[in-house]
Image 1 (cartoon, rainbow, N blue to C red):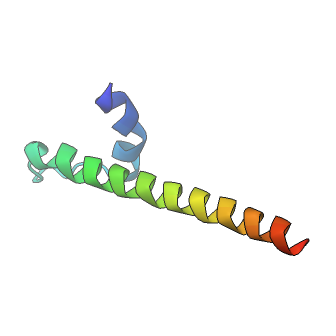
Image 2: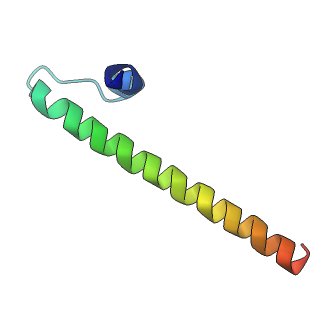
Length: 58
């Protein structure tokens, strides 16, 4: 299942022939994890902005 999730990223960041395939998954998993954390942070900030807009009547 992880390979299916990472498939779009493998097309964006293809493996070089010289690259060690053992380092591929951890690097891409870290990138994916970081991206998901950033999306979660953006979502949280968006909710906070919406809440503040309601509070000030905007």
